[in-house]
Amino acid sequence: MDKVCAVFGGSRGIGRAVAQLMAQKGYRLAIIARNLEVAKAAAGELGGDHLALSCDVAKERDVQNTFEEMEKNLGRVNFLVNAAGINRDSLLVRTKTEDMISQLHTNLLGSMLTCKVALKTMIQQQRGSIVNVGSIIGLKGNSGQSVYSAGKGGVVGFSRALAKEVARKKIRVNVVAPGPIEQRWTKSSYVLTSLGQCCE
Ligand code: NAP
Image (cartoon, rainbow, N blue to C red; front, side, top):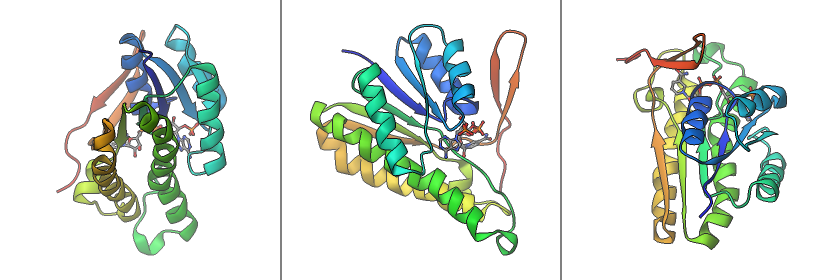
């Protein structure tokens, strides 16, 4: 059976590291981000026959088109990683409403939209696995990150509930909640390092 995985936010950071690992394990991947050139570069570095697509996860039409393209070019998507995310850190009293909306739309609504479309195929196939990237901040909170924390906490609640909803269809939904990560290039590879706990 084909192993086709969509990695939203796969052009940089955690999503990119996940994509590298999955490529090594024989998955066919779609690397998805808003910036197509960066996504293409990340997909190209994986070697093999992977796809790069541009999509804003906060836009339902974009998400639908992206799944159509993936199905046309790679086949049915049976693995989904939601690693697209943004921060607009600031104290709540200084946070602009537009920054609240963009964080919630990207970090929470975006995962809901991709899961919703991905599940149509997964339910038909009675198989699939979804990993949503949360954050330790969504579990513990942190000063200057109340809106980010709300979105990531929402991802946990959403994922737990969805896991119960689709378990009988043999579909798994999980969340990972990383602590702070440092990203850097060495001469030959892209390295992510955990910086340990960040909040009390
Ligand atoms: P990053 O390096 O900034 O990469 C973010 C990725 O998401 C990029 O591929 C970016 O590409 C994409 N993206 C952002 N907004 C998007 C949108 N609206 N639609 C589609 N793609 C979008 O991020 P990261 O630090 O690896 O973080 C990845 C995830 O882990 C995020 O959800 C973040 O909240 C979470 N996290 C990060 C840390 C950390 O320390 N880095 C810790 C805990 C959790 P484009 O900009 O081209 O769209």
